[in-house]
Image 1: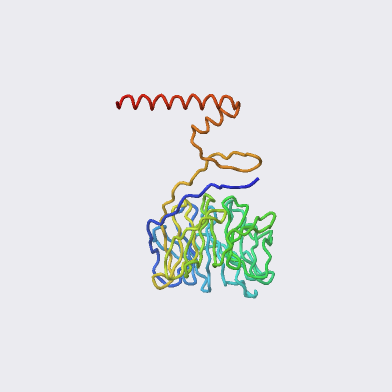
Image 2: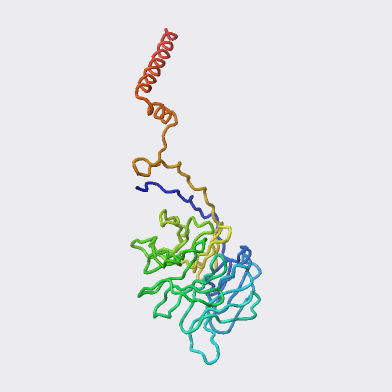
Length: 335
């Protein structure tokens, strides 16, 4: 059965841009579950702010590097990567969790560099990058650090993981291409493979499209594409580099970091999204998938004639006679 047509996710248009921070090395934004606040890495510390850039607050600072923060699904905790180590422990980047007020920090990984935490949509698991086998692969563990499971295994570094909205698959970049892997089967599928470098994919809340970075036009800009890897649209057009796209929970904004104003800071773009094109219900003819857009009168005639060829001949004769009569009346009136 041949697949000839797919539903299209509507077009995405940027309606406005805002610079939310003004500093140095302000990167890695992530949204709170309610969309009211954004957490981000500011120099070596973790900060939060309102979605419009107001009410900036330091959430955690361990004096060493802390970064790549994300909210828990209940909004009460922050997961992040840190150089902070336990006394007498080997020095690795590890994943930590802290209350939203900066208290009760707990280290939940050890024994290798582990970073880029991503909380599953149900809040029960963390996807992350781990160097436990030599290079950065994608792993999944319980939200408390238990049941660590390796998901990908290659000889080069995978990029930061991001969950699909159903929590069953993870998208990531590998060697300039974008991939998706099922967490149960662990079978990877390539979504975007072209001559350009594509990074950092992340799904919108509806699961219909992905934002990602691409150097297709020279610098790293933010693009979007359909969930199946088709239909690329460019959203930013800077000569500098964008990083870390993050969809808002309502799907109407993307926060990201950019050095377009000189230093890396957090920006936000507002989006206008058209409704998707919904194709007509397909017909299956001789085991082939066919989407038709025929005139309804033609379809009625086809249905009428399909039951009896003689009926179709009679109908055609009557239609022709009617046309002749109307033309005759027209010319008689003109005389």
